Image 1: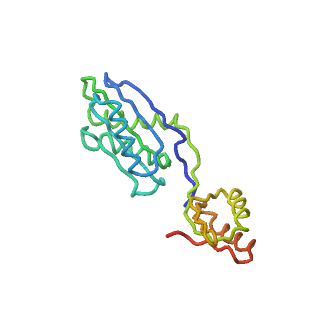
Image 2: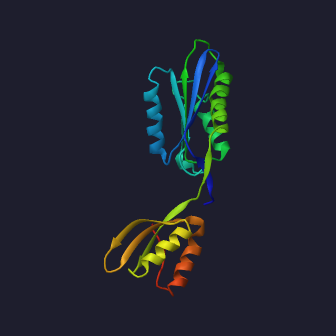
Image 3: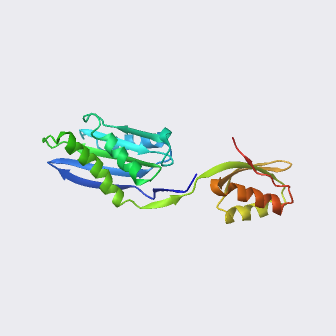
Length: 203
């Protein structure tokens, strides 16, 4: 899993098209459930809007399990799909888009709607600050009390972290490590401990 871009913060873009007001919101989300919570939050903030159309890529950019979209009452294919197309084309992951429409009384037609919803997301993406997300995976490691300080220092150097620790006769650690470097980290730990520290993936 290669590093990928994610939103660094939420942004919004507001425009008026033929008397209809379109407000586009982009926000970072990790997982479809959080995307749906954000969508509901925007609906609650704009209870009188005619439509709340949305799309999300809630995981890594190419994970088809984490995609979703809705036209929310607009003609089929005129809102959610063009919004999702813009998100997928950006290569950004862990992102949700909601476009709120206050209807102004003038019909835009299917082409106009596609342009309004897709264009709103496109404009918001231009002002969205991003950062690089390094995919991480969970691993298990058992060490003794004398080794713990060395393990902690090493984890800082490789951008790893301890997410859980059980202190018994030995210390059982659950680690979050950069997926791409996991083999290098495993080899290094084994070498510095003369074979005592063995990483194993958490399945």
